Length: 352
Image 1 (cartoon, rainbow, N blue to C red):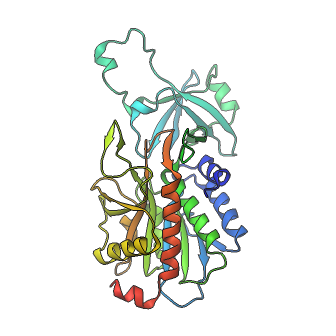
Image 2: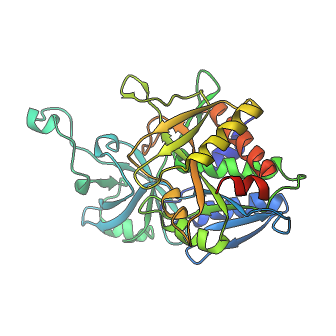
Image 3: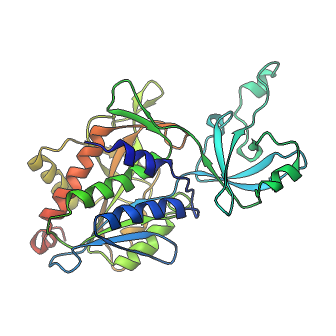
């Protein structure tokens, strides 16, 4: 059963790339409440350890804490904020949406992403998306001095501001930042379910700065030095009138075979498939050569790390309102728990 209160808390925290402090504190609290020690690497990734004294190969699961957002680039004389995107956005989907400006001392101010009035737009403008470089926020302020008096400054974080919604079918849930806060939630739940279990050494790496280039994964894998690793992330669902691919909400955890910067080892895929079948865990596949996950840097570390990505299908990725299915989340939690308990030296050596 999904803990919706915990999920909302994790997804609702503001934390774009390089501003992950709030979500990092939340995840530290969650792991520490389960009796796990947490450490941070130099970039700020939060790494929790479990059963590190046990025999067996080191297993790392990784999920990135950061979300897409913006950074304040300029405050004009009329009080409008010019912003710079952090992560991938489609400008068509940001106009008129609510965002939250977060100051250096943690104050939060709601703002609307401005747009041109729709009435009277010439066809050549109406039929094009607005250049992302033209994005600006409207705080409802009378001028630059009023904005500065709020403590807002160039370089401040701008995060999506939205609400958490359980849909008509309660297995469908909508919120911001499921990419990849759902991965962080999954790891916390895995830690909870394995609390009284003994298993191979397990490390939960909650990485930073994935969106601009998988940066936290590079330092986290150096810190843990795992033998085997799984990145937990989201992947595009193709079950709507607007998107078509082989992934659907509600059909289980996704075994990601390939993306733009990693290919899952065949022996590892076969092994994970076998665990899914043995444990009666619903699973599906993704074969996309676009996008990427923390696996892109994990598998290239040292002399190579056996690694693949386990994904949650998501609708409306990188928008203020994405959607997931709780059944897929539960399947992923069950799979990671089963992998941790099954992994030992013999299993690992058979994957080489």
